[in-house]
Length: 533
Image (cartoon, rainbow, N blue to C red; front, top):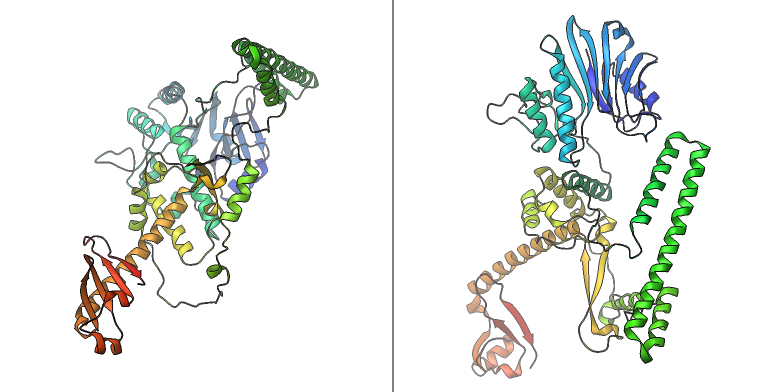
């Protein structure tokens, strides 16, 4: 017998596609989750009977769970029960064994602790009602990550993934209490069958997949912030809040019923909210202006009113910054355009470089990721450095594959070329753009890629420099170089062979091109400064 589960994310427009797929796979019993189907009933869908449980019909569609049973097995179904919008039970005889199949759509990982407690208590209670005389099979999307076997624990198999979450720990506890096993990890599968696998045609698609997966994982673990630090709107009060809540209720009712009368009520509530907000804004503004008039008074009264009215009537007028965005755009466009003759008139030749392909290892990626600083701006893409530093081996593997494609010549993702720029005032007049310093922030993954390339260049340069120094040390006696002390600085004077023969004993650094070596610790490369005297 073939059993399965499928999160369909809304069944109303996909029912034909779902039936075609499960029939093609020859499935006998399938639990569908997040059906968003209202009410509790059963229906015939051709080759399958459909038992569903959802929210009441006067509410907006959400959640929902159902069971599809092949029509030839319908005679073995003794009873079924729609517990709530997340749990449904059906009693059936499978191969002569009395069995209860429980279909469930689990609570979200970022939901409140109370909601999680209620859901798992309800699920545990339904399992207890079955008793010990029947087999229990639980199918569905429980939003749980249970990891792999630890020590002698027999609840989870040893072929699962590495990650666990709160829902996973709760599910393991539930199975321990009811002598159940989580079978996903008891059978070895290929990696392609453990995860939703995607093939990427170019680095742009691969980067989009990594970014989307990381943001989804962060939302699952931490939730989404409502930005509570933002100051409350100055005109907001309890009256406005009640009117907006009333409008939301009427809007939800209209979405459920699609009734003309409910639509009319929603439109009236919407108009009422708009008028109340406009009135409250005007009242608050007049009150603020009166307070400022009282505080200032005297000869500055007219000046204060002119300033406030200009702020109110023309919000695009920037009274704080002396430099407009258009001027900044023009300034940086000119600044970043190469105008130096030595570069502008340089001939661009096609140069073919034959070398061995560069390889980026996972260790290099991990080392650079761990070197990122916390609490830094993520730039474009909004991927915080902390998310990458605490990533799994799978994340580092994906980053390594992405960077390998880029370093082999494939086009970089467009977002890597996008930067956020801000300016910091240094000195002088604030109206002059030259008196500011520009700061640029690239996206986090772009910075990681840049650091990897930088490390490879430095490593290659260090090796070349070490070989050159060894060669110079070995053949130093053959070179026509004269070492002199001049102004307390160590100079190495390089002379041509003809000059060396004539002036080898009396060479003066002032008459020749000299190369200064600044002595540095062994851990730092020596700096070379050339001077013409």
